[in-house]
Length: 181
Image (cartoon, rainbow, N blue to C red; front, side, top):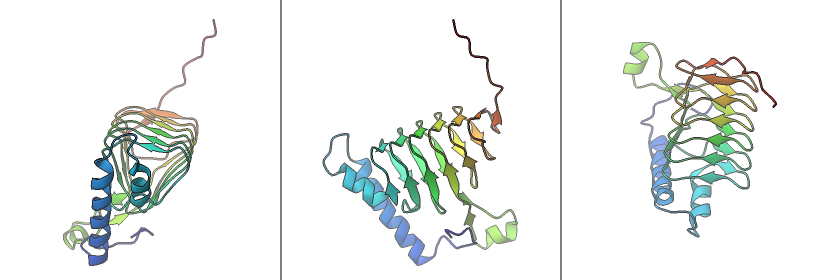
């Protein structure tokens, strides 16, 4: 599954891993800022994180263990990370409320879907990236360092470093001239 191969989500081992993630989510999402157990619960929920990360509850994952966060990463309220494949987020990335980062995908062939098969593709988000509220990052996307994703954007393709994208599907915006006055 993590390698992007076809898998069956009903596999007993995967079901148990999702159950453990749901248990950790329930515990983490019941905390508030300043609760002494919050940091340990977050460490139980996600695979790895650097210093200074802040994730506002509620926060939702498939497995959690496939998520790797750099230093000073911020997730606002209500984010969803479907991590059947690795999700990496670079240092100082800021993720707005209700953002969805999806690695889970489904075969386009209806017979394969009918057979209950799924697959995934990893998502990589660079350092110093800003993702606006309600954006959707689809499977297999890489967002380069210093990029900006507009609120509500549906990102279907890689975003080059330093690029601002917006819309559905997300497309690069023309740079605006900077006026110094």
